Image 1 (cartoon, rainbow, N blue to C red):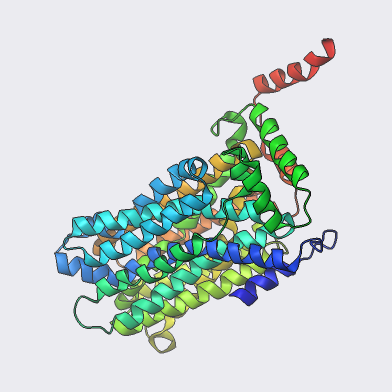
Image 2 (cartoon, rainbow, N blue to C red; image 1 turned 30 degrees about the horizontal axis):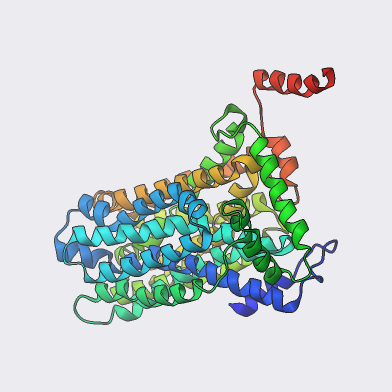
Length: 489
């Protein structure tokens, strides 16, 4: 992973900028800190996917109904994720980015150990909720920290390490579940408990990263401590000038009006954030990640083969995420979503058809796993790569954090609903109508992309703001009056 991220850090199509004034040691430190913080994404991915291996075992052991199983076992962590995403801004600003990341590590560690040792479904759901809180908060704190220490010329690649680690964590969870699945007895305890190992390592590593210089200046007014961090980030920087820029940004931003996210003028960014976040989950991605072994068992693959196939899905997810990261600034966000939509429709329609016919003999019985791999590839290089970038671009500075939280919350609410309802749905319907529903949603996504989604590649944030912000007539009149008023004084 280090070689991959180093390549991203030093490869750019932008020949008009240079980071030659940054020393090699400074760049190595920034890369090291970014990788460390991005490991919160690894735990995010692992925690999200690991429950798939314990799905049927937990329901059988505790004799849970489909609805109860979906509510307190499969979806509880996701409801914690929703809460963590909505309120993650508060500890990130109040206690600091690094302190929040440390707290997230503690939540992951306690959740892993508590879930593994749980004696009943209610204790289990409580500890899964704690892990979900860590997942939601990490989606706020980790990208913010990396963006605040990264050089602007490489910020996208470094922040992208967070998404890379999410899919890497999903892969390792699938591989771990496959091998632990051969253990006799309550192997689900080992599946969930093994997360304590990377959580403990992450905790040891995260304590060594410095606090964010921006947070130190704006939230703690500690310019001396901030200056020390800035020196480590860029030894050639003019410290006084860097601090003045941060101070100046604060004063200008605090003077701006229209800070309500749901003001009429922000209707397009809010609508676009809602749609891309909702379609991300209505593709069926978390349904496949959570219930892959159950789906493949229904497709007449035996248990061990099903778990092995999910590990293959994790490999494809990782590889095509890397491909998407390399293409997003070349082909553009909209083009990647168009390509992904075609892959979604092809794979989902054919999987649905196979379940309707109950014919899983294609390609030696591995037709459905291969089509699921096509689906994962389409998602990883399109929605999986684009969603967080697109949401962060379409909101203006003064409401960008709120917009990011809104989009993240929509994403996780839909994810939680799918995890909650799917056990009941699968008890009444086969995979045919379920996959047909997701195919219909992806047809609607294709319509959205073709006729409504703007392309944000190569467009400045200020220009995007001009294109997407639509003030009401009254707001236009007020702005015109405010612009004219100083001239009359």
